[in-house]
Amino acid sequence: MSATTSGPAPLLIACALGIEHLALRSGDRTGAGGPVTVLRTGMGPKAAERSVTRVLADPALRGAAVLATGFCAGLAPGMHPGDLVVAEETRDPHGTTPCVGTDLLVRELVRAVPGRTVHTGPLTGSDHVVRGHERSDLLTTGSIAVDMESASTLLSAVRVGVRPVAAVRVVVDAPEHELVRIGTVRGGISAFRVLRALLPAFFEWHRSLLLPRR
Image (cartoon, rainbow, N blue to C red; front, side, top):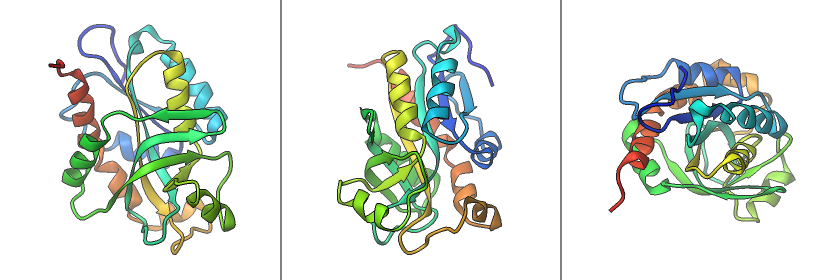
């Protein structure tokens, strides 16, 4: 779905993988507060930077809110596949990007997928799949999860222009539940269904940004 230049400010939802894109494209689109674009950036920080920078150059997406989503690796003990991560900020070697409206996102996610645990904290970006000691090393920095695109997506978005940004990820890989390969997701893990159910929460977050401030 393409955004238009008139009406409410648009929303750009960015993900990396085909399976993530499928989940988002097949989710419930009713209740959107404005035009919505779902972008598949491709895997890795460089691909995310290129795709987001290119798409946000479109005048139809001027001022668009940007939400990075998809799957991630949890870093903290006790995390499980299907848990949710709401980033308070994203960080990588190129910078730190504060997220907007995290409390609202948490409330709406609890409503959208009742029974799922929602974790909040810093989300770290990496240029490779993190395993073993790297996971515990990142945990000592205060980060609660890691993925390859969110930090680059949000940093690229705010470099193009001032806008609200956020990141919500579904845990598929955790310290006690490490995946051998991302293809395992296709084998029945619940993360796909969870991601598909998140659109109403994303739309409510976006709608709140459109409300006049007192």
